[in-house]
Length: 162
Image 1 (cartoon, rainbow, N blue to C red):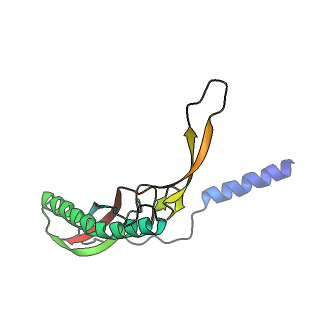
Image 2 (cartoon, one colour):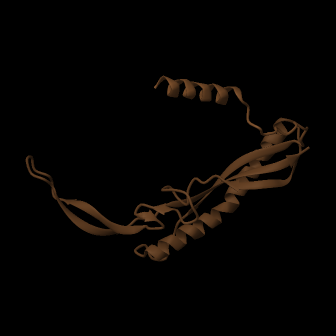
Image 3 (cartoon, helix red, strand yellow):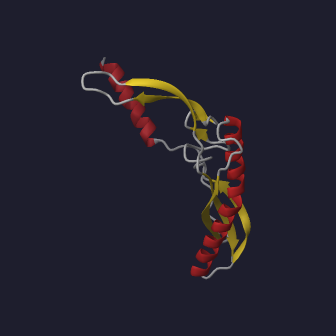
């Protein structure tokens, strides 16, 4: 037992005193950049509010339409930031999406609906009447489709600056 503890302590001591064999890149001067994040939103308007396929298509179309608004807002913020520090905004270096939502339930191009990924229609239990003391409430199963009001896109854009 004491041999195992001594061996374990020796291994831990060796691990703590050794350094990884990875090389760190040399720090070099880089060109200035400005990064800004913008969010766009578009109202979801399905052709059929009782069809999952129609709602999913409308959410996807609204998300795609909100991209332009997110880019515009990010550009406006970047111009303000660059001006504040005495730089001129250059061209776009990179764009990334902050995976916030397809809409309010979760990330992805279609979004995670209230009934699962891409599912906006499903069965829920609804209370029937008022619960009476000492008795369990009664429930009915009903089919519902939940349409999100808006689809959102959040983008982070990096610009060159000079």
